[in-house]
Length: 248
Image (cartoon, rainbow, N blue to C red; front, top):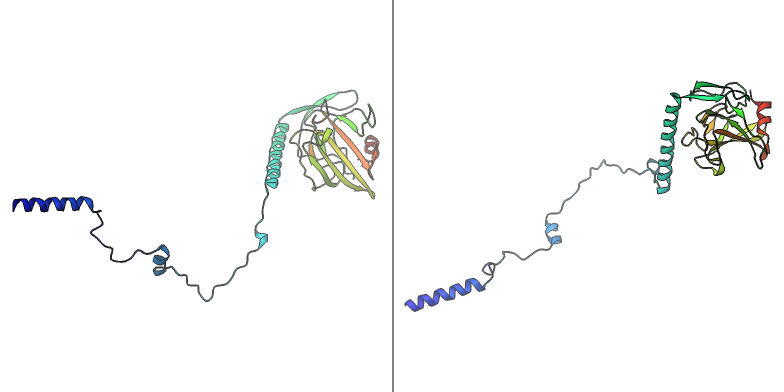
């Protein structure tokens, strides 16, 4: 009897260790796939009979390329620099030349002003000294009007901005404007402006005497001045003679 009891206990112990824990149990139902389980409890959507279909309008959104984003960031940076230059200029007195004898007077710069006069053509700068002119010192297509950096520059006439760039070849920071004056196609150029000072953009319409930037010494320049050019029907003309005859 004793041996039988011991034998029974040993067999039971072996069975307990050898069999997996789940071997003694059977699932009540067969295993289901995810699709089978979802089919029995699928969600549904009920749409009311008065629901309407809305069409998307492409004009309500736009796609922006990486190039457009870079251009926008550059424009914003330039505008911020212009604001900083304007703020500094409003609080700084600038010594400017008033005649060919180089006499100077210190006057604060007001960037909200426009060029004086009421004529169709205006002087693009005030308080300057005339430097080299057309064809002086070699291939020179304009006139240099010497003034302190930060001196305001104005559109010589009403027109449309063709070029407004921080780097325009040897002109450095420059603006060019297309005009129609007395039936003639006139283009004026304003070179060597201060970085970040441009107040106009390409394609913008400007009025005569409108502020477009400030004097600088960028590009092929060794001193603060405005390099001013005038082209009539694509031909170079003497800008100094043109201003003296027309500006008022």
